[in-house]
Length: 120
Image 1 (cartoon, rainbow, N blue to C red):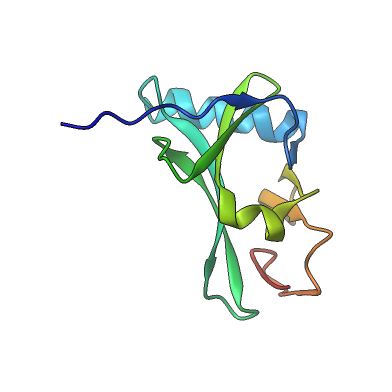
Image 2 (image 1 turned 30 degrees about the vertical axis):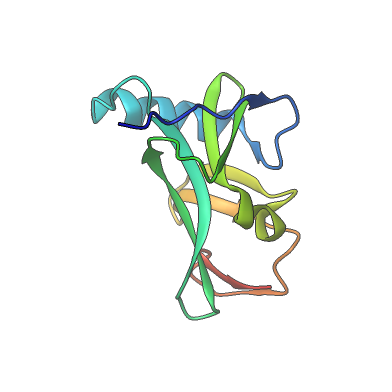
């Protein structure tokens, strides 16, 4: 049986997480009993009304991932996704008119009104 080697943790993260996002992610991790060893996966997938949608959730690292630590949060990203996410900021808003994670992506040429779909 082949064992998966962990990716070394990079000192330069391609994205940023705000304190509000980290606080909310820690609450989710605790409430959902996310096991140790799982990291925050940030990525993209095809779909949505603008071509791509963001991926944000807890997952185990794979050999296609780069691993980062952002404000104490272990983060993984498929190496191929960095071109779409470099410089992106993930935030969490908790207002009367808007509640949820937001993505400020300088690589998006256009975004959808929902805030989770973009084109590059």
